[in-house]
Length: 386
Ligand SMILES: Cc1ncc(COP(=O)(O)O)c(C=O)c1O
Image (cartoon, rainbow, N blue to C red; front, side, top):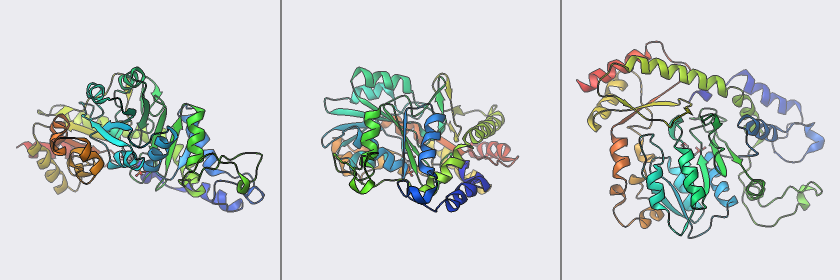
């Protein structure tokens, strides 16, 4: 999560550029004031080009990106949308907000969607799948895509935690119909808040662009106040200030990922002789963003002990084991739409995921890593198992 560690002069310069060019903080119009300064538009173009995608739309958050994506695919009341049991609650919230029925699959040893379980959970009502690339490691996206194609389902990739990751040299977020991204403060690149959506097809892009802007079609032949519209919408527009920060952060994405990967390797090297550790798996030919290092220990007690021993040394873990309640569908009794879908107790619904997650430890990977950090990880682990 180092985007926030690298906020500096470059971001400030982009903001100053707005202030030197008419101070227009709104993404549309005011051409006479802004002297050609369009930060959201530039950020969208740069992002789309970086990821080799066809269309990009900036929005207010990763959560709204998912909501807008579902709207652009025409997901409606009664449709089932399948995602995975290990994700942030936002993925399921976006489905619920679309009046659709959330269904979750088990995860596999990549800690992402288990394609075998996905196939089992498809019904006549299923319309779309949201595969999440959790904490920097790609899901088995090629297999998931094949299943979606076979069953004629839309595929959205929730790439909030996978920005810049690849499988077989293709960027995450570009395999399916739509890829969504988050730039909140914990993400690989950040604008404080913000999101981006990548689209394969112009049809979905156009629907999303209108829906996220009260239905505005941005008809170039009409002034905005007379703009054409075909359907109602909402407001999830990105601000120019967010766009400006995004432009500067995107230029740092490769630097961040390279450094994270390097730091992850240093920790792995230190842990290589430790007994009882198994690493999270990643699909063949995947290029991880190394946002976190996740490993499985022998049991839940060791995972919890590790955290205690690590905290004592002044360091903390990330999401696993501590923040699981926000990231595991088996604990979301407060989401009645999810609870109602399953006949049996929600907490018993995902035994495989529960087993994997309870033995997992996630270490955050930062840009600035203290040189003794890898050794501290090892010491904490040895203490935890002793
Ligand atoms: C997998 C996943 N999806 C969506 C989101 C939502 O992003 P945002 O915080 O920008 O709304 C997050 C945020 O942590 C996430 O982890």
